[in-house]
Image (cartoon, rainbow, N blue to C red; front, side, top):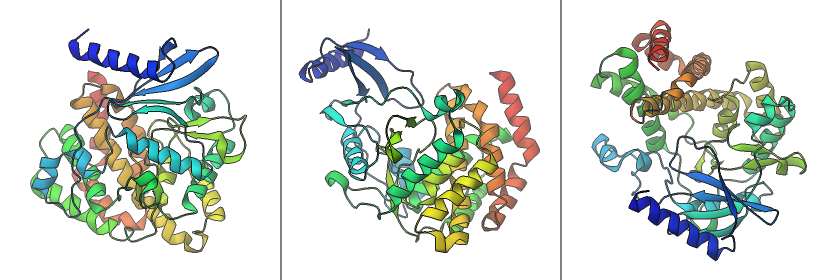
Length: 372
């Protein structure tokens, strides 16, 4: 064990001791793409979830309209409005969601300086696992949509718990989109992306996003999908939907979390289910009178999110040595191709077909699969 690991282990032991869980049995949970880890702690028939989030120096946010050089210097987290290791933000967002009647974990103890939280344990019944085990897909998704409607009943809070909610603005959305040209396209094309290609891609997205950025702003979870939702059938109503991993929440468009759920990068969601759940949302939300505008915005934000995910998964494979994420890219491209059929995205569809046509995408993904 390195000195740093030993220091971290001692800090964790001290935190659990101060919280009254010093003798608890620890059961680490599998990790994913972030530096954050979770450990279930069990003591005297009770359990809680220990979040271990190593702290990093706080990065200033990139201002609206930041230049490419400013974005490069500040880094991706600052541009994309990511909270990073800010445990205080998780606490504030959890309190906001619980106040709205939603199931976010109660925080039993916190050490925000060192990055430890002791949380209510919602169990292991992730949506993704419950669905594999035969849970009713329509019931789970409809309840998750109902929870979104409850979140969207009110405008985005300005500063829940005294912590300002970041704006999901043009700078953040374009910064995410840039991941596709920075990480995926060089892999797909076998060459660095040309500067004029990158600028054209960015400008097309800028004009497309301009149509929807002025729309109503709500609390956006940002990663609202089957790996971050926990099904708790013994509870009632929307409290059956346990929510985690919301520390990067922002103020953004109400379509964003809906498409995070319905175009899930890690599991197939059929077009029929996606259409039914979108109709379910529109039938019960205050946006029912703006159906066509909402559907157009849904396609735009779906394509934006999928472009980001294609870039992130390529980065995880190439930079971080995690090639398993490339297994999800065919699914994400299928979603993306469907999104691009919307008339609002006609110019971007033409760009993708010209720069990285479908045959190139498929050949690239097959090639990457052969090398894994």
